Length: 377
Image (cartoon, rainbow, N blue to C red; front, side, top):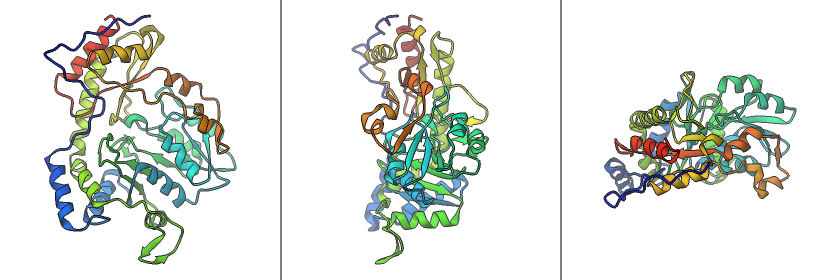
Protein backbone atom coordinates (compact mmCIF):
# COMPACT_ATOMS: atom_id res chain seq x y z
CA UNK A 1 0.00 0.00 0.00
CA UNK A 2 1.30 3.45 -0.93
CA UNK A 3 0.64 6.13 1.67
CA UNK A 4 -0.64 9.38 0.17
CA UNK A 5 1.03 12.63 1.09
CA UNK A 6 -0.32 14.13 4.30
CA UNK A 7 -1.39 17.78 4.17
CA UNK A 8 1.59 20.11 4.09
CA UNK A 9 2.12 22.67 6.79
CA UNK A 10 0.73 25.92 5.43
CA UNK A 11 2.67 29.15 5.13
CA UNK A 12 0.69 30.53 8.03
CA UNK A 13 1.99 27.75 10.32
CA UNK A 14 5.63 26.77 9.89
CA UNK A 15 5.97 25.30 13.38
CA UNK A 16 7.33 21.77 13.49
CA UNK A 17 5.97 19.52 16.23
CA UNK A 18 9.20 18.06 17.57
CA UNK A 19 9.66 14.56 18.91
CA UNK A 20 11.87 15.33 21.92
CA UNK A 21 12.59 19.05 22.33
CA UNK A 22 14.83 20.31 25.10
CA UNK A 23 12.96 22.79 27.28
CA UNK A 24 14.51 24.67 30.21
CA UNK A 25 12.43 27.02 32.34
CA UNK A 26 13.16 29.83 34.81
CA UNK A 27 13.30 27.47 37.82
CA UNK A 28 16.09 25.47 36.23
CA UNK A 29 17.93 28.63 35.18
CA UNK A 30 17.76 30.06 38.70
CA UNK A 31 18.94 26.80 40.26
CA UNK A 32 21.92 26.52 37.91
CA UNK A 33 22.95 30.14 38.51
CA UNK A 34 22.75 29.57 42.27
CA UNK A 35 24.95 26.48 41.93
CA UNK A 36 27.49 28.42 39.87
CA UNK A 37 27.62 31.17 42.46
CA UNK A 38 27.91 28.73 45.37
CA UNK A 39 31.52 27.87 44.57
CA UNK A 40 30.72 24.15 45.00
CA UNK A 41 30.51 22.68 41.52
CA UNK A 42 31.12 18.96 42.11
CA UNK A 43 29.35 16.54 44.45
CA UNK A 44 27.84 19.30 46.60
CA UNK A 45 24.43 19.99 48.13
CA UNK A 46 22.56 19.84 44.81
CA UNK A 47 23.81 16.30 44.19
CA UNK A 48 22.84 15.31 47.73
CA UNK A 49 19.37 16.82 47.18
CA UNK A 50 18.98 14.94 43.90
CA UNK A 51 19.86 11.66 45.56
CA UNK A 52 17.29 12.30 48.28
CA UNK A 53 14.62 13.01 45.68
CA UNK A 54 15.41 9.75 43.88
CA UNK A 55 15.20 7.81 47.14
CA UNK A 56 11.69 9.16 47.64
CA UNK A 57 10.59 8.54 44.05
CA UNK A 58 11.83 4.94 44.00
CA UNK A 59 11.20 4.12 47.64
CA UNK A 60 14.73 2.70 47.97
CA UNK A 61 17.19 3.09 50.84
CA UNK A 62 19.94 4.42 48.61
CA UNK A 63 20.40 6.54 45.48
CA UNK A 64 23.87 7.24 44.12
CA UNK A 65 24.31 9.93 41.48
CA UNK A 66 26.76 9.31 38.64
CA UNK A 67 27.81 11.02 35.43
CA UNK A 68 25.51 9.24 32.95
CA UNK A 69 23.01 6.46 32.48
CA UNK A 70 25.78 4.33 30.98
CA UNK A 71 27.97 4.96 34.03
CA UNK A 72 25.00 3.89 36.17
CA UNK A 73 24.75 0.54 34.38
CA UNK A 74 28.50 -0.10 34.57
CA UNK A 75 28.66 0.83 38.25
CA UNK A 76 25.62 -1.33 39.04
CA UNK A 77 27.17 -4.40 37.42
CA UNK A 78 30.54 -3.80 39.07
CA UNK A 79 28.94 -3.23 42.46
CA UNK A 80 27.51 -6.76 42.20
CA UNK A 81 30.94 -8.16 41.36
CA UNK A 82 29.95 -9.09 37.80
CA UNK A 83 32.87 -9.53 35.39
CA UNK A 84 34.73 -12.01 33.17
CA UNK A 85 33.17 -15.45 33.11
CA UNK A 86 29.75 -14.13 34.01
CA UNK A 87 26.72 -13.88 31.74
CA UNK A 88 24.07 -11.16 31.83
CA UNK A 89 20.73 -11.81 30.15
CA UNK A 90 19.26 -8.75 28.48
CA UNK A 91 17.30 -7.41 25.53
CA UNK A 92 18.57 -6.84 21.98
CA UNK A 93 15.85 -4.20 21.44
CA UNK A 94 17.46 -1.36 23.34
CA UNK A 95 20.02 1.44 23.19
CA UNK A 96 23.62 0.30 22.81
CA UNK A 97 24.52 1.41 26.35
CA UNK A 98 22.70 -1.60 27.81
CA UNK A 99 25.03 -4.07 26.13
CA UNK A 100 28.07 -1.78 26.20
CA UNK A 101 27.90 -1.76 30.00
CA UNK A 102 27.92 -5.56 30.14
CA UNK A 103 30.92 -5.72 27.81
CA UNK A 104 32.70 -2.93 29.69
CA UNK A 105 32.82 -5.04 32.88
CA UNK A 106 34.11 -8.03 30.90
CA UNK A 107 30.94 -10.11 31.12
CA UNK A 108 29.03 -11.80 28.30
CA UNK A 109 25.75 -10.32 27.07
CA UNK A 110 23.14 -13.00 26.37
CA UNK A 111 20.43 -11.45 24.16
CA UNK A 112 16.95 -12.97 24.25
CA UNK A 113 13.68 -12.09 22.57
CA UNK A 114 11.06 -9.60 23.66
CA UNK A 115 7.29 -9.52 24.00
CA UNK A 116 5.15 -7.70 21.39
CA UNK A 117 5.27 -4.62 23.66
CA UNK A 118 9.07 -4.53 23.26
CA UNK A 119 10.00 -5.50 26.83
CA UNK A 120 12.07 -8.60 27.51
CA UNK A 121 10.16 -11.89 27.46
CA UNK A 122 10.29 -13.63 30.88
CA UNK A 123 9.83 -17.01 29.20
CA UNK A 124 12.91 -16.45 27.07
CA UNK A 125 14.81 -15.30 30.15
CA UNK A 126 13.87 -18.49 32.02
CA UNK A 127 15.10 -20.60 29.09
CA UNK A 128 18.41 -18.72 28.97
CA UNK A 129 19.28 -18.95 32.67
CA UNK A 130 22.33 -21.16 33.21
CA UNK A 131 25.29 -21.76 35.51
CA UNK A 132 27.07 -18.61 34.30
CA UNK A 133 24.07 -16.30 34.66
CA UNK A 134 25.06 -13.54 37.09
CA UNK A 135 22.27 -11.02 36.44
CA UNK A 136 19.12 -10.34 34.45
CA UNK A 137 19.03 -6.86 32.93
CA UNK A 138 15.52 -5.87 31.78
CA UNK A 139 14.86 -2.61 29.96
CA UNK A 140 11.80 -0.55 30.89
CA UNK A 141 11.23 0.43 27.29
CA UNK A 142 9.85 3.84 26.27
CA UNK A 143 8.82 4.40 29.91
CA UNK A 144 6.82 1.14 30.02
CA UNK A 145 7.81 -1.25 32.82
CA UNK A 146 8.93 -4.74 31.98
CA UNK A 147 6.96 -7.65 33.44
CA UNK A 148 8.74 -7.66 36.78
CA UNK A 149 6.58 -10.41 38.27
CA UNK A 150 7.44 -12.74 35.42
CA UNK A 151 11.09 -11.73 35.46
CA UNK A 152 11.52 -12.25 39.18
CA UNK A 153 10.09 -15.74 38.80
CA UNK A 154 12.35 -16.42 35.81
CA UNK A 155 15.45 -15.07 37.55
CA UNK A 156 15.03 -17.49 40.49
CA UNK A 157 16.99 -15.31 42.91
CA UNK A 158 19.55 -14.10 40.37
CA UNK A 159 20.24 -10.35 40.81
CA UNK A 160 18.18 -8.00 38.68
CA UNK A 161 19.70 -4.82 37.29
CA UNK A 162 16.97 -2.59 35.88
CA UNK A 163 17.70 -0.37 32.90
CA UNK A 164 15.22 2.34 33.87
CA UNK A 165 16.91 5.05 31.80
CA UNK A 166 13.61 5.97 30.13
CA UNK A 167 11.28 5.22 33.01
CA UNK A 168 11.63 7.52 36.01
CA UNK A 169 8.31 7.48 37.86
CA UNK A 170 7.04 4.29 36.20
CA UNK A 171 5.56 1.55 38.38
CA UNK A 172 4.78 -2.15 38.20
CA UNK A 173 1.99 -3.24 40.55
CA UNK A 174 2.32 0.19 42.17
CA UNK A 175 5.95 -0.53 43.01
CA UNK A 176 8.38 1.99 41.47
CA UNK A 177 10.84 0.77 38.86
CA UNK A 178 14.35 0.90 40.22
CA UNK A 179 13.26 -0.87 43.41
CA UNK A 180 13.22 -4.48 42.18
CA UNK A 181 17.00 -4.90 42.38
CA UNK A 182 19.58 -2.34 41.36
CA UNK A 183 17.98 0.45 39.30
CA UNK A 184 19.76 2.54 36.69
CA UNK A 185 18.37 5.90 35.54
CA UNK A 186 19.48 8.46 32.96
CA UNK A 187 19.29 12.25 33.04
CA UNK A 188 20.25 12.66 29.38
CA UNK A 189 18.98 15.72 27.51
CA UNK A 190 15.89 14.04 26.00
CA UNK A 191 14.79 12.06 29.06
CA UNK A 192 11.67 12.83 31.11
CA UNK A 193 13.97 14.56 33.63
CA UNK A 194 16.88 16.08 31.73
CA UNK A 195 20.20 17.45 32.95
CA UNK A 196 22.12 17.17 29.68
CA UNK A 197 24.00 14.19 31.08
CA UNK A 198 23.80 12.32 34.36
CA UNK A 199 22.57 9.13 35.96
CA UNK A 200 21.45 7.61 39.24
CA UNK A 201 21.74 4.11 40.69
CA UNK A 202 19.15 3.01 43.27
CA UNK A 203 19.20 0.03 45.62
CA UNK A 204 18.26 -1.17 49.10
CA UNK A 205 21.45 -3.05 49.98
CA UNK A 206 23.89 -1.06 52.13
CA UNK A 207 26.95 -2.94 50.91
CA UNK A 208 26.05 -2.40 47.26
CA UNK A 209 25.47 1.31 47.85
CA UNK A 210 28.80 1.65 49.63
CA UNK A 211 30.60 0.02 46.73
CA UNK A 212 28.78 2.27 44.25
CA UNK A 213 30.02 5.37 46.09
CA UNK A 214 33.55 4.03 46.08
CA UNK A 215 33.48 3.14 42.39
CA UNK A 216 32.27 6.58 41.25
CA UNK A 217 35.06 8.34 43.15
CA UNK A 218 38.23 6.56 41.99
CA UNK A 219 37.81 3.88 44.65
CA UNK A 220 38.29 6.41 47.43
CA UNK A 221 36.30 7.64 50.43
CA UNK A 222 38.89 10.23 51.41
CA UNK A 223 41.46 11.95 49.27
CA UNK A 224 44.45 9.75 48.41
CA UNK A 225 43.05 6.77 50.33
CA UNK A 226 42.18 4.11 47.76
CA UNK A 227 40.28 0.93 48.66
CA UNK A 228 39.50 -0.46 45.21
CA UNK A 229 40.11 0.23 41.55
CA UNK A 230 37.50 2.81 40.64
CA UNK A 231 36.81 5.50 38.10
CA UNK A 232 35.49 9.05 37.89
CA UNK A 233 31.75 9.04 37.31
CA UNK A 234 30.85 11.90 39.63
CA UNK A 235 27.89 14.15 38.87
CA UNK A 236 28.32 17.93 38.99
CA UNK A 237 26.17 20.21 41.10
CA UNK A 238 25.30 22.14 37.95
CA UNK A 239 23.69 19.08 36.37
CA UNK A 240 21.91 18.20 39.61
CA UNK A 241 20.63 21.77 39.93
CA UNK A 242 19.17 21.49 36.44
CA UNK A 243 17.39 18.24 37.31
CA UNK A 244 16.10 19.04 40.80
CA UNK A 245 13.30 21.45 39.83
CA UNK A 246 12.09 18.90 37.27
CA UNK A 247 12.05 16.18 39.92
CA UNK A 248 9.92 18.45 42.10
CA UNK A 249 7.28 18.59 39.37
CA UNK A 250 7.73 15.04 38.11
CA UNK A 251 4.10 14.11 38.78
CA UNK A 252 2.87 17.02 36.67
CA UNK A 253 5.34 16.21 33.90
CA UNK A 254 4.23 12.57 33.89
CA UNK A 255 0.52 13.31 33.96
CA UNK A 256 0.90 15.71 31.03
CA UNK A 257 2.64 12.98 29.05
CA UNK A 258 -0.04 10.47 30.01
CA UNK A 259 -2.83 12.89 29.06
CA UNK A 260 -1.22 13.51 25.66
CA UNK A 261 -0.81 9.75 25.20
CA UNK A 262 -4.46 9.13 26.08
CA UNK A 263 -5.56 11.61 23.42
CA UNK A 264 -3.31 9.97 20.83
CA UNK A 265 -4.63 6.52 21.74
CA UNK A 266 -8.25 7.64 21.57
CA UNK A 267 -7.71 8.92 18.03
CA UNK A 268 -5.52 6.11 16.68
CA UNK A 269 -6.55 2.84 18.33
CA UNK A 270 -9.26 2.04 15.76
CA UNK A 271 -7.05 2.52 12.69
CA UNK A 272 -6.47 -0.70 10.72
CA UNK A 273 -2.85 -1.80 10.87
CA UNK A 274 -1.86 0.49 13.74
CA UNK A 275 -1.11 -0.92 17.18
CA UNK A 276 -0.99 1.68 19.94
CA UNK A 277 0.60 1.19 23.39
CA UNK A 278 -1.75 -1.16 25.23
CA UNK A 279 -3.02 -0.08 28.66
CA UNK A 280 -2.15 -2.43 31.48
CA UNK A 281 -3.48 -1.96 35.00
CA UNK A 282 -0.29 -3.45 36.43
CA UNK A 283 2.09 -1.16 34.52
CA UNK A 284 2.14 2.59 34.99
CA UNK A 285 3.54 3.95 31.70
CA UNK A 286 5.35 7.32 31.88
CA UNK A 287 5.58 7.72 28.08
CA UNK A 288 9.15 8.72 27.50
CA UNK A 289 8.08 7.85 23.98
CA UNK A 290 4.68 7.11 22.48
CA UNK A 291 5.46 4.33 20.03
CA UNK A 292 3.02 2.79 17.57
CA UNK A 293 3.59 -0.43 15.63
CA UNK A 294 2.75 -0.13 11.94
CA UNK A 295 1.38 -3.29 10.31
CA UNK A 296 1.36 -4.22 6.66
CA UNK A 297 -2.27 -3.12 6.38
CA UNK A 298 -1.19 0.47 6.98
CA UNK A 299 1.70 0.41 4.52
CA UNK A 300 5.35 0.83 5.28
CA UNK A 301 6.48 2.45 8.53
CA UNK A 302 9.04 4.67 6.77
CA UNK A 303 6.41 5.96 4.35
CA UNK A 304 4.20 6.98 7.23
CA UNK A 305 7.11 8.75 8.93
CA UNK A 306 7.89 10.64 5.72
CA UNK A 307 4.25 11.67 5.30
CA UNK A 308 4.16 13.00 8.87
CA UNK A 309 7.38 14.93 8.31
CA UNK A 310 5.76 16.65 5.33
CA UNK A 311 2.89 17.55 7.65
CA UNK A 312 5.30 19.17 10.11
CA UNK A 313 5.43 16.33 12.65
CA UNK A 314 8.76 14.85 13.68
CA UNK A 315 8.84 11.11 14.37
CA UNK A 316 11.54 8.63 15.32
CA UNK A 317 12.47 4.98 14.93
CA UNK A 318 13.56 3.64 18.30
CA UNK A 319 15.23 1.22 17.49
CA UNK A 320 16.05 0.56 13.81
CA UNK A 321 18.03 -2.66 14.43
CA UNK A 322 18.44 -5.26 17.11
CA UNK A 323 21.92 -4.86 18.57
CA UNK A 324 23.28 -8.15 17.26
CA UNK A 325 22.57 -7.02 13.71
CA UNK A 326 25.34 -4.42 14.07
CA UNK A 327 28.66 -5.84 12.98
CA UNK A 328 30.51 -4.69 16.11
CA UNK A 329 28.21 -6.84 18.28
CA UNK A 330 27.62 -9.67 15.81
CA UNK A 331 31.37 -10.33 15.73
CA UNK A 332 32.02 -9.64 19.40
CA UNK A 333 32.99 -12.74 21.42
CA UNK A 334 31.17 -11.30 24.42
CA UNK A 335 27.76 -11.26 22.71
CA UNK A 336 25.55 -14.34 22.38
CA UNK A 337 22.20 -13.89 20.63
CA UNK A 338 19.34 -16.34 20.90
CA UNK A 339 16.65 -16.26 18.16
CA UNK A 340 14.82 -12.92 18.43
CA UNK A 341 12.06 -12.86 15.77
CA UNK A 342 9.72 -10.56 17.72
CA UNK A 343 12.44 -7.99 18.34
CA UNK A 344 13.56 -8.08 14.69
CA UNK A 345 9.98 -7.57 13.52
CA UNK A 346 9.54 -4.57 15.83
CA UNK A 347 12.60 -2.84 14.35
CA UNK A 348 10.77 -2.79 11.01
CA UNK A 349 7.49 -1.45 12.40
CA UNK A 350 7.97 0.90 15.39
CA UNK A 351 7.40 4.64 15.00
CA UNK A 352 7.55 7.13 17.87
CA UNK A 353 5.16 10.11 17.86
CA UNK A 354 5.51 13.32 19.91
CA UNK A 355 4.03 12.99 23.41
CA UNK A 356 6.18 15.33 25.53
CA UNK A 357 4.72 17.88 27.99
CA UNK A 358 5.72 20.84 25.81
CA UNK A 359 3.04 19.90 23.25
CA UNK A 360 0.48 22.65 22.81
CA UNK A 361 -3.15 21.76 23.66
CA UNK A 362 -4.15 21.21 20.03
CA UNK A 363 -1.03 19.22 19.06
CA UNK A 364 -2.27 15.69 19.89
CA UNK A 365 -5.36 16.26 17.72
CA UNK A 366 -3.12 17.60 14.96
CA UNK A 367 -0.93 14.48 15.14
CA UNK A 368 -3.96 12.18 15.08
CA UNK A 369 -5.43 14.01 12.09
CA UNK A 370 -2.14 13.80 10.20
CA UNK A 371 -1.78 10.08 10.83
CA UNK A 372 -5.36 9.39 9.80
CA UNK A 373 -4.97 11.54 6.68
CA UNK A 374 -1.69 9.82 5.73
CA UNK A 375 -3.43 6.44 6.00
CA UNK A 376 -6.44 7.54 4.01
CA UNK A 377 -8.82 7.78 6.94
